[in-house]
Amino acid sequence: MIATAVGLVALGLVTGSLVGLLGIGGGVVYVPLLLALGLPQLDAQATSLLALVPGAVTATAVHAGRRNVAWGHVAAIAVGSLGGIAVGAATATSVPEAVLRRLFALLLVAAAARLLVGRRPSGDDPEPDCQ
Image 1 (tube, rainbow, N blue to C red):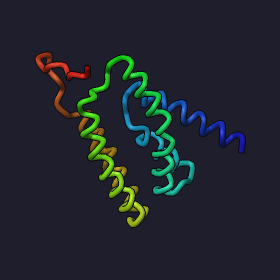
Image 2: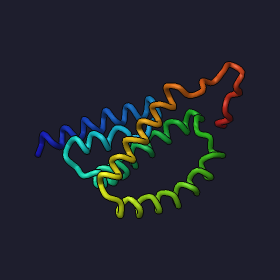
Image 3: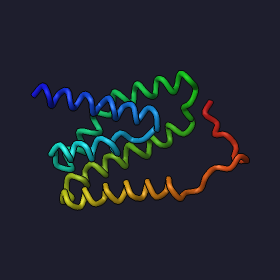
Image 4: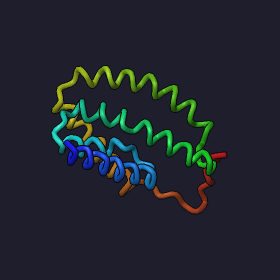
């Protein structure tokens, strides 16, 4: 039991560091590792979502203090997210685990491909307004 708790704390430390450094969604790291620990897909997703809350609050406070948050975008994204998350969570509970796992894997592959071959900003692109 103690070894599991220490392992989960280490998982949180590594994932939190990656989230803070790279701005990735912690679920990209948490879900595959929770699956490797034997959790079913839906449990891994739900556990990941709740585990991210304290880190998201902390990271937001740090970034806000450094004026890195584009507050004008936050409200619009949050409004859309609330509806999308409710629909997504309800749908996830009715989809077979194998389908959820494949969809998650496809999302990871698509995100990786986008980062590898996507458009790179040029020096002429204006800085986003994060004030």
